[in-house]
Image (cartoon, rainbow, N blue to C red; front, side, top):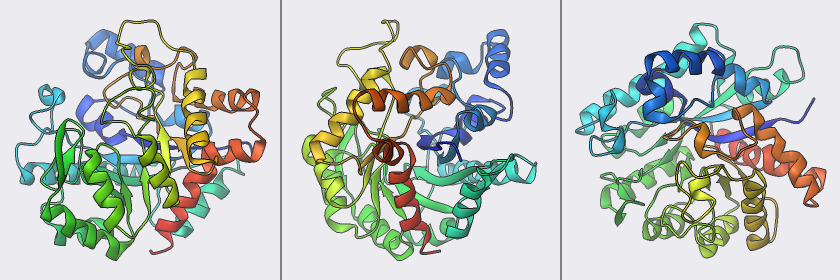
Length: 355
């Protein structure tokens, strides 16, 4: 079997239902359509992700999000933004149903709900018909109206949860809305522990991250969050938080997003070299003392597109180029595999063994 990758954050349902992309199509077809309609390209940048492109790039597993933006967000001009918890719930269910509908329509996907599902997907990559495993993680918990509703979501395939997006939720402050965990957020963490769900720390306000790490006993990760040493923003992780996540056997997913790789970079500036992503990976490894706690979480098409990613990347399939750059930097094959897939597979197995 050739080397596989895990991408720990892709807003697939958001791209399909809110931006309006047919993810079963080749990326070039989506781009051509948007050049004519001036639709998704205006809101989300030039497309980087589709199911055929994920398979082409040996991305065996994607953390597929349920992400519904609030009405106060920059995405407020799009469809499916929520004004209250009831709307958030309705649109979140629609995104969960989207993943199931893709499978029903014959797309080469599998929802990762059990260890058996994971092993089936991995085995498929040793055949001529590989399948994409989708591990469903909610980004911002507002679609869960009350903590006691979590069981309903878990029964239907939710396996990870981030309490907040940048604008904050009723559960916790976000990176653009300072605040701690709320009492409601603490109750939700207790319910999450009952199901051993993955706690995604991305987008949480730093004080909320520390409290969540202190009180949540289950698996933790930051699916898409770069080192704060690269860009000084509460959206990114301090060295201390990188070490705290590693001490919990968690993983940090590096985002190949130029704005989170170089201070002051803005859209329209020259694209950074892909080597900058490797530098961010290496920074985490040096900070925590091991290659066992870092991976990829591209967030491609999650509010930015082609113009905002490193210059060697044309589509998500090009993430595999990171392997050679890691080798040139002196990483051994075992560590390269750890970074590109095995670290995330460890987290997945820890979550799925409870189901």
